[in-house]
Image 1 (spheres, rainbow, N blue to C red):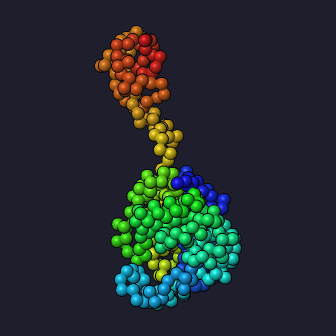
Image 2 (image 1 turned 120 degrees about the vertical axis):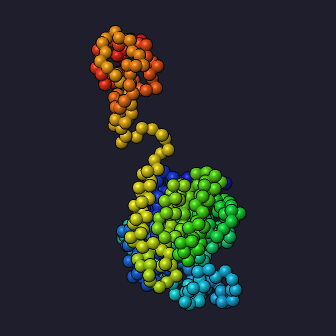
Amino acid sequence: MSYKNAIFVGKRRIAIDEPTYFIADIAANHDGNLERAKKLIYLAKEAGADCAKFQHFLADKIVSDYGFKHLKTGQSHQANWKKSVWETYDEYHCKREWTAELVKTCKDAEIDFMTTPYDFDAINEVDDYVNAYKIGSGDITWLDFIKKITSLNKPYFLACGASSLEDVKRAVDFATEVNPQIILMQCNTNYTASLDNYKYINLNVLKTFAKMYPEMILGLSDHTFGCATVLGAVTLGARVIEKHFTDDNQREGPDHKFAMNPTTWRDMVDRTRELELALGDGIKKVEDNEKDTVIVQRRSICLKRDMKKGEILTNADLDILRPSPEGAFLPFEINDVIGKSLNVDKVKGDSLYKGEINA
């Protein structure tokens, strides 16, 4: 198996040593209105998103109306929709004739355009417009579909919500045989906006992925409020974050309730940028901004009394006090000092410096 540890989406390099790449999934939050979709693109850019993502599906090609109407169990969040599943998908789909206008708007807003296609025609129709693809969690077992996307030789974000490790291995093995430009996204596909969902996010799966696929680019596709999961994921090595985006969490629609809004999105990005700075390079050293505190907080070997040149230093003559000027003897060097004679006059409280004692 081969895969890349750095990937370009357009001009943006995505890698462990780069800032986190934020995908604002507008999804169905355009509410079937092109002007709303365009407005959300600009709001996402202003809030700090790197990419505005849509979802290209058609009701007939993503769900079976009969299947959902006769489904006895497992309806999850869709059980609360006011219309049938088929009708909801039909009402909130991203119309294919919008694509060129959405792409132009993203270009004008200086934000990347991306989409999750959900049928083969959608792939063919958007391929001229996208620099990368998102493969949704629900299609992780549809290998023919994964093959179609990966064969286009563009980067792809593979989400793995509601999947077992076996599902992930199968999809990753299959996809990387065709195209090594993978970003693997941990995900929990519960869209109920319940605070109880936090205990199911399982961010430590990112550590499992990192062991399985060293240096593979990892990400998080998330549906919780706030930025706790995001900060945790970035700490664990994720460098792509996808969250749903809306301008108003109180609007009617399938995706608004669990989406981030411009205020919470901006806070998430700002806190993440602070975290990235704080994570550092992992090398323990005296940092540039604490070099002065080495002097003022550390201790050095000082004299308890005035002493003359030629006097022998004893333990009773010495104290361990701040500061620790450059060149002074440090506390762990005290045995190098005791029993030696001074070659200069010294005053009480002064640090003892290298070169002031006879060898």
